[in-house]
Length: 294
Image 1 (cartoon, rainbow, N blue to C red):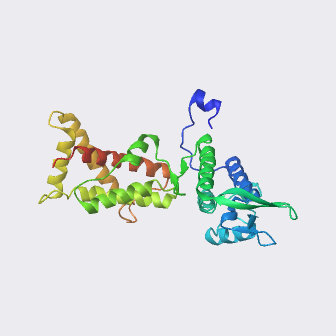
Image 2: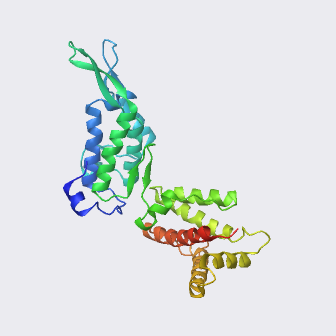
Image 3: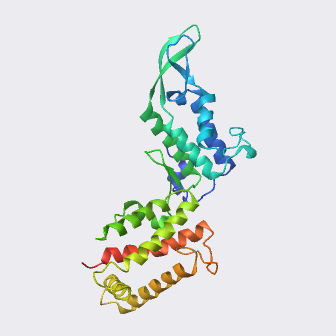
């Protein structure tokens, strides 16, 4: 469903990284409703005492496995209080866990003695409904995450990069370079900051490797050829700007702790700085690959 405000003003920008208390309360209530209707009984069934099949969710079994797989969750997880709120990364892990263990409950025969229905389940339908509900909350609160149809939380790239990162296919003519670029792209969409930092490292590795892909050419000759192709012979001023950008990005890689960890190098600490640097280099590499000669 869409709300009037979405139709009138458009969706909120999806740029927020942290899940706050109101969003967590909504997500935990969403999960609680799946406990109540037996949705998690597909994998953690509470069974009929007479042995006629699932009638709900065995919450103790669910939580035991959940805590074994996500050990940093707070004890008061579903208390709807601030001290019961997990960190954002743990909430995202929890949502993935729930997706993998949810199904749409389908009431079957009614057992009058215990006053319960025996349940069947449709896993695909349950997972789709769960994804839709989670993604609606993400969207309405401007969160830069999506729960995919494979049950993985992906971080939405900054709007300026979003289309390119979701549609790009790397065909450089050099399989290892293609692999590094694709790995960097996937890692940049990961919600974990440390994984996005790895994406930045791999992108800088790809940049250095790109300079050596020309047959028999040294780095200087190869980057000259690549920038010539990217600018075109009719645009010498733009060619000069590209060269300055290429030199600056190489300098950034050498002076910050991206590819190396010398104590004299400055760390890239903030997620906004990771986004900014990834955007700058990815855009240049993308331009070069689109205009690269044979």
